[in-house]
Length: 120
Image 1: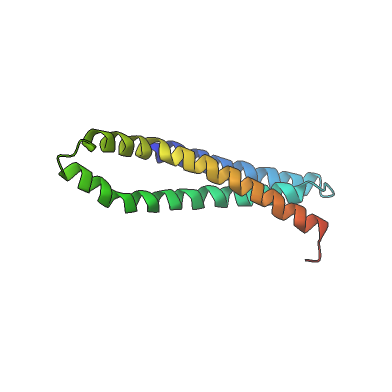
Image 2: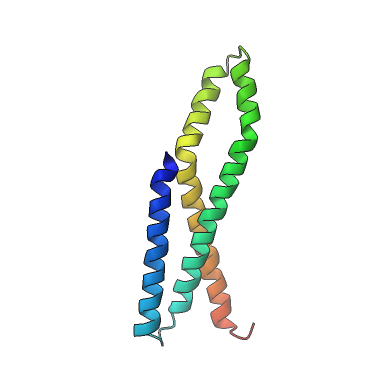
């Protein structure tokens, strides 16, 4: 459910970044900020994908614990179902946002180091 919203937005983000980069490379080739834009676009996308992969791996690894709670007559049965449901619904949105932000900051840091030290 969540990925039916996230994936079209992610692909729209990729198309927007590609079009913006092409327009800037063609129209304003001397603009110094295009390296920042390029790195921010690439690394924010990579960050979002990596965060979702980590989220899905951690969700899959927690399924054993969830099934154990569901099979027992534990007082945590209802709480476990609620937490798992909320994590399944809202987790992809949180993972995407955090991954995108961390990737964006990493991309800007990489671009800053690359622009200051172009030979490196």
